[in-house]
Length: 234
Image (cartoon, rainbow, N blue to C red; front, top):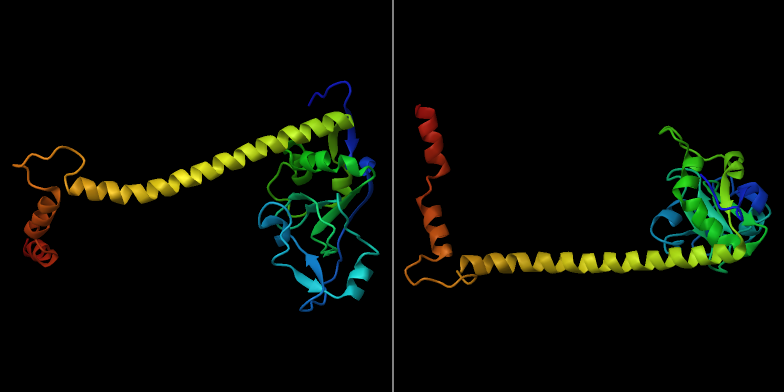
């Protein structure tokens, strides 16, 4: 992959103050407390889904934060189960994470929008997941070594702006497609009903209505027992 002369190749480790993962033991859940995120909270849709989180106590959260302290503009990467899902933290909501999630804490938080897009790009996904199909886990040592093309900050901002604009356009197209599909599903029965009432073309008074033809054909059709009887007689 050739990059412009003003760009640089940088590893995730070189750009980060810390690359780690969440707590390595099963937490003790409580009814209400600090949200505790797993892979499912990153794969349920765009962004981070807090609606289905389980909770841990404030004391446990404080203990987990000694290892991993998620903050706004840090980047989460799923490293078990569904691999390579990337989410930039865009909230100040405190939470803890499980070992199945990696946390990338950049030195320069201004690079977070671009780096999160770069990590989700096909080039980086191949690096993270490997070429084979047997990979079931992303190791932190490998994630730290992954290389991404790094443009100057002003170009990063422009790339993010254009990508987000294209994503928004794609979302609008998808919404229009879903609306059209729903309209088609509603229209099809109505068209069929009109067709069998002879309302789609000018009706000749001498023509038999399609609904009457269908009813007569059903009446004239031999019953299943009659067909079975002839078959057995043969």
